[in-house]
Image (cartoon, rainbow, N blue to C red):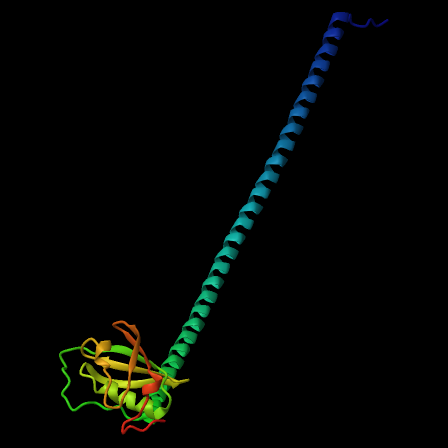
Amino acid sequence: MVQSPDVDPRDSSNNGDDRLVLEQQIRHLQERLAFYEGFDLLIQDNVTHARELFRLAAQERENATASADRARQSAGRREALLRAELQTVATELSSLSAAVDQLSRRVARALGAPHTPDRAPDESRSLTPVAVVVHGVPSARVALALQRFVAGLSPVSEVAAREFAAGVLRLEAQVTDQLMAEQFTPGEDGWRFHLLTERTDVIEFALEEEALSVPGGRRD
């Protein structure tokens, strides 16, 4: 008859407790491992998202640089077009000024060449323009006579007709000294000047209607 070895019941109880402790420790380690694995996945996702943000930022910077370059090129083209238009306008204005000057000379010739007294101009003194306006001029013949009258005044170096319309004669006199209303005295032609305005740059008169005449005593 074989006898079984004696087993202490306390040893069996200790072995069971140790196994339970080990199982708990294993479960705890598994839980921590799962946590670290999940945290690692979260870090990888953040890194991937950050990399995408950097890529988008670089792309936006490139797009902004390209847009700025296009804007500068467009502004340069607009400036060139505007400069060309301004040059065209300047050329047209120059041509128009020349045409107006030529037309003014033609009008002056049509009214009659201005009479300039036979005296040497004082070149050391500058000429000053003065507008002479006469109202109530009945005809072109009287206008021409008035132009010659103004040209014969002592301060006047030259005179040009600017306009004669609706009985109003506008002359431009280049003077070496101040032109004064008292110099417009009644002459042998019987003109009477009624002063309306007297300034350094303009003198304005009205002809007395009853005294209008032309050289030689003939009335229009």
